[in-house]
Length: 442
Ligand code: 9WN
Image (cartoon, rainbow, N blue to C red; front, top):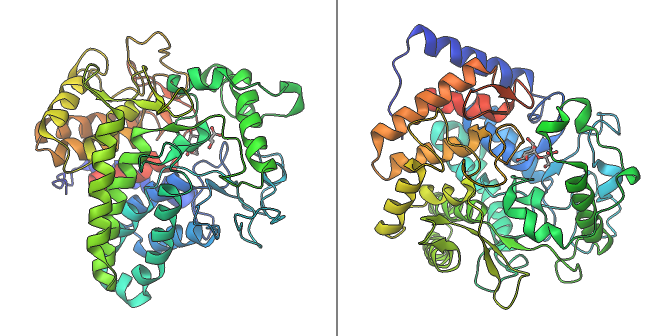
């Protein structure tokens, strides 16, 4: 747990501003990431949001997670978007008319009454559920929260480590760049090269009405995103039938899975389920993470392209996803030490910039404002802050936390910022930026 910040005037104003963002983005049952760009419920956003909400509205935090989990598919997958039926079609692309989950033509068991996407996002949910419980154990117990969410979270992790174990080593694979949550990360450029893009005239992007075109993914990226999603949809979202021509093991997603599996062990202990089984599973996943994705030469974790050759190939691009495993307890000491050194090195400049960029400052594809190709994001910095604290790097964690507060306040709780100037990019009043600011303040 992070030490409390003294409740000075600046801290109080920041907390108030952040709470206002979260109240403004609440729809009655969940929180939209942004009223403009993302008018529905997103999976990993909701987990981060719940982590912030727990500090001032634990009931809402529980509701946020339960609304998302109510849209879980029978095969265990938690969809990356739960669509709000009162939002006009065309406000977000691709919308429910593209994903067509409600038709239940899918053998994967999409929910009958809720429209969702068919892909997933990183599993931050069990971690969030545990933190939400801890913030208000009495309210959580009264409402039977943990007993209700435990089987759903267990089924979610089971889906990821069975149907999505495409590399055969126990780790989960993403089958679409959107699933990583870092859509246009340079890590995906190589694997995406193999994908024939859909003609950009065949769809209409809604994001460009709200976001600057040179900050967002390109039309060529979108053509490939649409191709992959349509292929999956047209195979009934079946992981055995779909070709999955894009498949990758991502260190951020798998690190979050490990931390969530450890949280699930705690939840299991509270609800009388088998905690030790989750601990053993977390240990196996941790060993596989190091075995499959650690790259000593880079001093960080890399993504593995599961479709490139026998056993796959490490993708030689350094993205912040490869530093997120700092949050995993129980990694070998030399691995942790190397990651901390890499974070402080010239490529990520921890301690010299307010926040850690999303991609190698010296990488060929670096761009200071194009989405996941360089800008600093608040969720990844929150994860790194937690990781540094976990490993006893308290001063560095404190400094990063201060940088995050300064950037969040000055940018109007922006979606992401230029890592050099702190200039706001993307949406303002962005929910996870506000939520994670609240979390670090409390
Ligand atoms: C596609 C909602 C989401 C985040 C992702 C971020 C962005 C969507 C988009 O917004 O992705 O899922 O339309 O660009 O990359 O991490 O969950 O905030």
